[in-house]
Image (cartoon, rainbow, N blue to C red; front, side):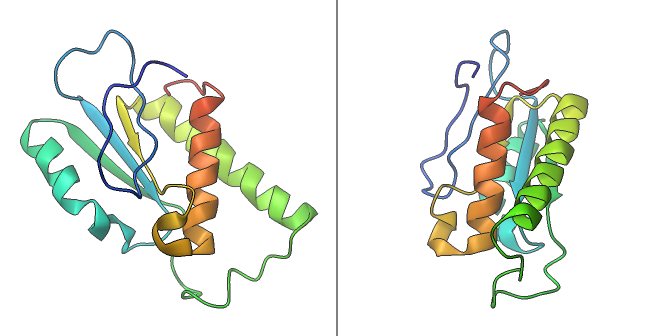
Length: 135
């Protein structure tokens, strides 16, 4: 993983990565969350970066159609592995295209234990730690 450029004190934000040549505030921020309303937890942070001139991008992995319970209904095993692989591939493509200086996502606990949040945070962390292009 490349050197850390920025981190947030919020517990739910755990992944921050940067290109080593970036100086000053981040120029591109990518926030990746599970549901269309999850950005509310980091809205002030995203607004702060935008006011500083950063390009702020928000990626939502699900449409939130299934609500919060029961969990997505995907049983453990090959089907879940397939979904995770597809999500990782799309996040990797997005990072390669945007080349973010900072990536923000859910921490290992998903903020408050939500399984969708934990899955998205785990996949984003995996993509960053694997050194995806742009990460």
